[in-house]
Each structure stands twice: as structure tokens, then as C-alpha cells.
Image 1: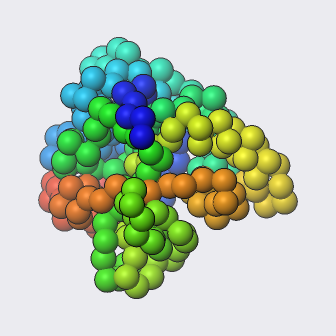
Image 2 (image 1 turned 60 degrees about the horizontal axis):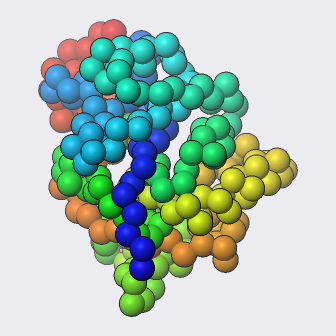
Length: 242
């Protein structure tokens, strides 16, 4: 088992965030502030605390708005995804396929409460997941192995006795090398633009990858799925009028 220092953090921040309307009509979801702090800052700060300072943001919707991050994080690099409004997140990952090796790949709209989840070292490809009796969200079926919980099935609409998926993953150089070709092949296939990235290594090419669950809790991280959920976390938005 070879433990590696993680080289970079890649954040997928291209989407519109339709379920967060009206606030996302003017601000990309990752830049929305929760009690004064931008959502995306929670993951960036965790990476910097782990001495991961190669940070790449894939942007699309209102892409120029992300330039404000450079005031606090001048090391950030941007990659533009011109297909953000025509394809699912597979297009964002394809845009950075050459950078996936030994990297964290994270959704930029996750509010990270426990920065220790961004660990400085990793040794196998993995996804954050919370063991639970039921979830209606994306989830993994797993089987226990000597190296941990191996993801054996992907459940896009949830299930019972599964691991609830959170969109922070790590990819070894070996898996990333395979993913470069797999992503292009999947995207070029009929209906490929409608695929989610997770379906490539965990469904379509699952036989090529061994991806494990890195366990966390619902207290560690949350995904703000709607404007109503934002208002619960930050009541100041209850009077938001745009």
C-alpha cells in the first residue's frame, strides 16, 4: 500500500443551482454565503490547512463571478466549461481529465463542517459516504473487504442499508489514467452528455476500478439542496428579495 501526498483539489462549480433560486439568479451557488461564509470557502480552507495549495475550479454559470475568490486565494486556477448548460457534470470532469491524478475532486456546493475530512494523504480511490439505513439521495452499495468498504453498486435514487454519497472523491494516478479515456468514450456515446461523472467509474466502467467508501457523518458535511434549506441554516435569507 503506497500512501501519497495529495497534489491538488479540483472543485466542480459550473452548474446553475436551480433549486436555490432566487439567490442563484444573481450568484453562483458555491459563492452563496451561509452565515457570512461562502460555501466554497469551507472546502478551499480545508485543503489549504492540509497543505494542498494547487486548487482548480471548473466554472460555467456566471463564471466571471468566481474572480472574487482571487482576493483571498490568489493561487486558484480556473478552467472554463463551455458546456455547463448543455451537459451534466461529466462535462466538467472531462475538462480537467488530465488533472485528476492524485487529486481530490469535489462538488463546490458542499458546506464542509469538518475540515479534517480533507486529509493530506490518501492511498486508494475513494468517495465520502455515510452509512445509513435509508436515503433518497445518491448512495453506494458496498461490500466489506480487508481494505475497507468497496463500492459495489451505485444507487442514484437512494436505497436501504447503503452509504449516502457526498461528492468529494479522491483518485489515484492509476485510476485517473483509465478515467481520461473512459470519460471521453462515455461522453461521446449516445446520450453521454446526460451522464453524471459518478456513473463512469462506478457503473459503466466499474470493472476497471476499485473505489472505496471513506466514512463520515451527516454532522461533518451537508449539501444545501434548496432555498428553503438555506433559510434553515441562515435565517437571514427568509427576507431575501434578490
